[in-house]
Image (cartoon, rainbow, N blue to C red; front, side, top):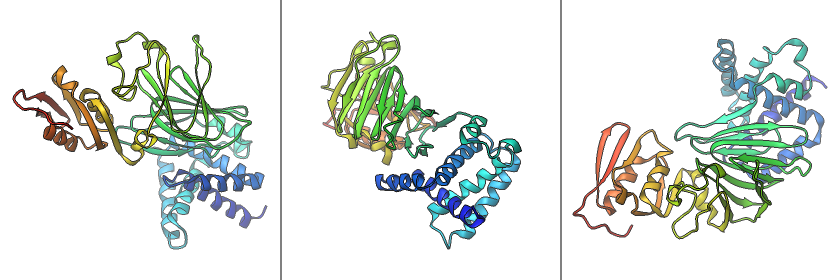
Length: 366
């Protein structure tokens, strides 16, 4: 293959990597990517190699040589912006920065098969910090949106695409491949999909699976197995982890159940119909509460900010909260609470706010 053809494939590879990582990537985009990838073996090999290089680059960005090559790559991208859209340029930046790692791979391995090259990189692990959200593209073209305080591990083989949600929340857009099931492990549950869109949240004591499109099956793994439960779009499965079964119902996490809904007990799973827009509103930086105890609402808001809110009264914690709030905007949340509830606010430090009751004030409906 001549240099011009190789350059064209490299540019196309960069474009598709950036497009799949973009927050506005659509199902139509993913279908066009799959068509491009399957059109030629050179396309598939180029894309797979780029993903390996990027995965390796994540662990090497502190090295001076990589930083220098990365900066040079970005400078080249800026010079190309007049001729290319930013999404294309961003993809080229990844490709050029990946070249820094390419020069560090031993000569004997540079053109080894992708699965051999992948063994040189660290296992794919993605994480977000407090208040951060991120979208990553997996080597099969699937994308994963990570919410705040989330850790994800990816282990792909020829037979199966396996992902472990270590903690937090992620929304999966799965590329269709009936021959390679896509399995998400979260706590003691396994979620199996072929080509679909679903949200998984793992808390200390519960797992929640919300299906947006397609179909998934959820089953309990480990020594205490269960029959798979199928979900249809608009349905949500909430399961209490077996390791914490027997805890008082009132200790369940914010998203485990809402008021008026039966909470799962003793490791069982409850399936219900929900407004999926509300349960995935975190993608737009929003948090919805529907008749939720104040203590649980505060715990949810605290996930998104270094400023932590505490409730200094058990009765206050049981007040019911409704409404939509911006994730991470603690001051606005506290101000709204003060407008409707008998609450006093004490700021103990730049990162700690304490809520206490004002006995003389009568609360209004919120």
